[in-house]
Amino acid sequence: MSKGRLIVLEGTDGSGKSTQFARLCQRAQAEGIPFRRLIFPQYQEESSALLRMYLGGEFGKHPEDVNAYAASTFFAVDRYASWKKVWQGWYEAGGLVLADRYTTSNAVHQGGKVPPEEQGAFFRWLFDFEYRRLGLPEPDLVLYLDMPTEQAVAMLRQREAATHTQGDIHETDTAYLAQCRQTAQAAAAAYGWQRVPCLNGAGQLRRIEEIHREIWQAVRPLLEAKE
Image (cartoon, rainbow, N blue to C red; front, side):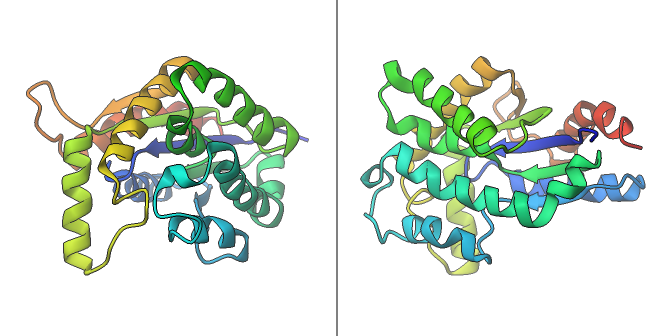
């Protein structure tokens, strides 16, 4: 059994991650590189029932109303279902997988719920739970889009106004989003995620194409390995 490649694009809400993930997939397809595309959570699947209830506020109106360990299991089960039903065979046959969010999102969004002195223990529990206990593959590369909270919140509010919808309990809590960014920076430093800044040195938003080029340069060696 050969091992595939798993590349994850990570970031807080409002970081432009979905846009960059779509651009990455389009580029890989245009280059003729075979891959499987994953987006987590799988909101349309039954496996996401508990996480949809959580994000919809049925267990509490604030993210902290559900502790980090309980909430992490909701998202982990959804990933496990995807692994067993969708991409295990492809990956174990040596295939390339591109993922918009992964286990790393539990680190970002749930890790901030624990006290700073317990964060390392939470990370270790999380990665042991998903990668070893559940048997999910570890990513070969994690790209973290680092967007300052102020700009991320502005983008989220613009999206809500344009779509006439309200965000989930994560997206509407500015203090929580700020904590997620701090947690993401800590996880990125501890686990070797590649940081992709969304602002330039002058504090201005980088152009979408400029960020895409940086992402493509980072993933290209792994993509070439599966051609």
